[in-house]
Image 1: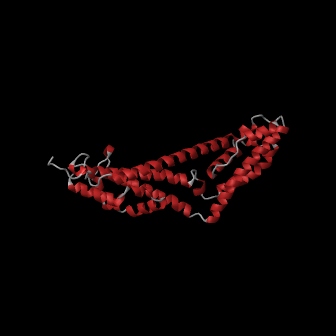
Image 2: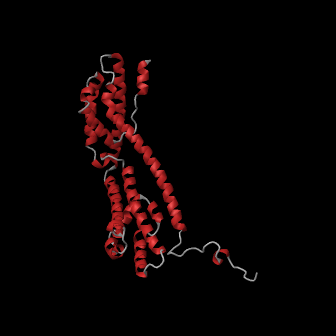
Image 3: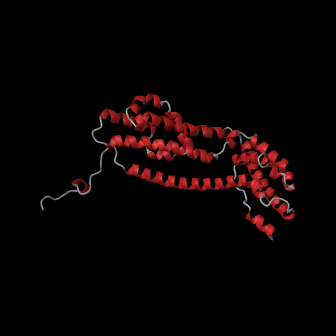
Length: 288
């Protein structure tokens, strides 16, 4: 039947988050209101949509601010880890290069021991990284002179990198803390509101499609007039989820390789014996 084909071809919403829903409902109830109320089904759902929009809007902003917490944490963690790696590799270079003044090397060792002793620490949990940042913040003052000894591009010093490293860790702490302040009852209500509203949108869409089958005078593109904005949001959310999964997989592989390389690297500029030297080949017999 033609109507069944229409229902099967419509996008079924499943991953819209609370931020998507509050934006989408705002759009639907204003710019798309005329299209919504062209159909009897749309008119019947209007008060329900208004109620859902109001309820979502009353949730704490931390739950409706846009990106899911996991995505926000991932973005901030990438920033944190980028500066952490930069500090580690910069200090590593100073410890490996021959001829560096011993006072500079001593400063570098203090920086390394304080801020990023091992690259593996960048694989710690968000909570551990956040706690470490709070604990390290006073060291920005204590080791200011040491950090300013090490220049970086564009006229800065390692103090700039260390400040950004600690700041990103503090941002992780703020993100985690903002969600921790929301009680379990509110979280549960938010989850139910999201799933309920997504279900209402899917029911509304199916109902309008059925009404169209029996009401030829309704515009043929009524579905698009009403749901185009939600469709775009769902498509973008799907793309973002795919990209986030791919990025997480790539980061995990990169971090594992960097940790292995760092573990295998010689310490304090002491190279392993080169291949073919007496030390590498074992005792030699010069008697012929």
